Image (cartoon, rainbow, N blue to C red; front, side, top):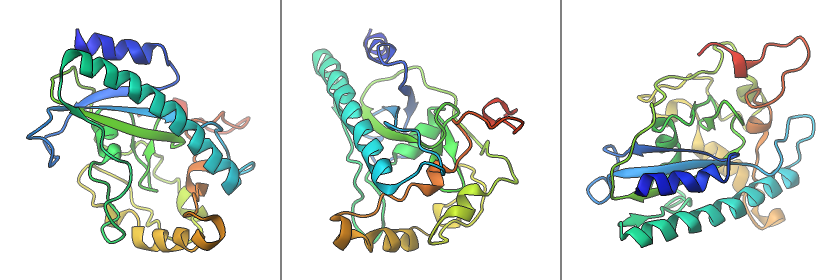
Length: 231
C-alpha cells in the first residue's frame, strides 16, 4: 500500500526518474531500512555549445523547485502512514571532507537510476548527468531496483575529463569499489569553484563536464548514439 502510493506520485511526474534501494552501507542503516531516490532533470538540458554558468545555475534552481514540491508530497504520504523517515541534506558536512551526510549518488546507482561517470557524477540513460538528485530515508521495505555495478560510459570517451577547467578528473572508469579520490580531485575542484564566491556570492556551478556528456542528448547525424549503445 505504501509503495504503491509513493509510486503513484511519480507516475504523475513521468519526467522524474525514481527507485528504491536498501542502505546497509550507510551509517543510517540502523534507523532506516530503505532509500527512495529520484532524479529531476535540469530546467535546461544544456550542451557545450549553448552552455553558460548562469543558464546552468538557473537550470539547477528550476530542478530544485520541482524536487522540493515532490518531496512535500512524499512526506505527506509517509506521515499519513506513520512511517519514520528523514530527508538528508544535500549540503556537505564541511569543507575538509567535502561529503554530504548521505550520498544521493551511491543510492541512485544502487537503485539502478544510473552509474558514476568519469566526472564522479551520476549518468542516467535518459538525461545523462543533467539531473538533480534527492533521497528520502524510510524505515520500511520496498521492491528495490537492480544496482548498477559498472560504468556504461564508452572506454575511449574522455569528453568530461578533457573539458574540466581545473584538470581535476583522472580519466578513471568507475566500479562500486572505486574510491572517489581515484576518479576526481575534489579539493582541487572545490578550490576553483570557491574562487568565484567574491564575484557570484556563491561557488561557481561549473557544469561543463555535465554539458559535454553525450548521454541524454540527441546524437548528431552520423554519430554513435550512446543512448542506444549496448550495456
